[in-house]
Length: 275
Image (tube, rainbow, N blue to C red):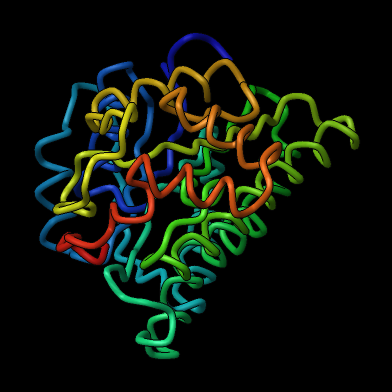
């Protein structure tokens, strides 16, 4: 793919706020041919469509609740029935139920988190990928927004961490499968940031030597990596150090180190949005 999404069809989930909105703005500014915006709030989608309008840009908005598998199925089927095959698919939408230990969560909390963060991206890609593979006229990209929480365990976000770890593992395996099958025009990028300063993570405590990313910085890193077809972006670099240390150190030594750096206390004051 070129260094921009000029003349591409771009589908973004969770597109009305936070990083999703910034991804949409990036695509619009780069001259995408069509934006397909998914979200739960019809009014917010309408506002986004109006504010993202550019000459020559077609915008389609679909109200989709990712906690409902049939809505994902129906929306994907509608796209394909209309002959819309995305060139770029950004699985951005996510939810978190934090500041609680696992046993304090309800089964509904767990199901909801897994449906949005893990199963919806899998389901959506499952529907659209065959058509993306068959359409060899332009390079295709899939960007899956995971999290450093899927790499470094952290108390009070167990289900969120599990959902992102599963997304990360699936995403990188999908990348390998596409390469092994010879579908070189389709590249999958996994993005695993630490805390990003969006409403979703309001109230989290900073971790030592690990700056909180601005949404603009996070989106820029993910976007450039996606266009380049890079496999996995982990940011900031201290997360890479943590991953290596966790692999090398005995569990108790790693736990002590993570606690000393403030990792294990970072969610205690969380009061952000659930999605």
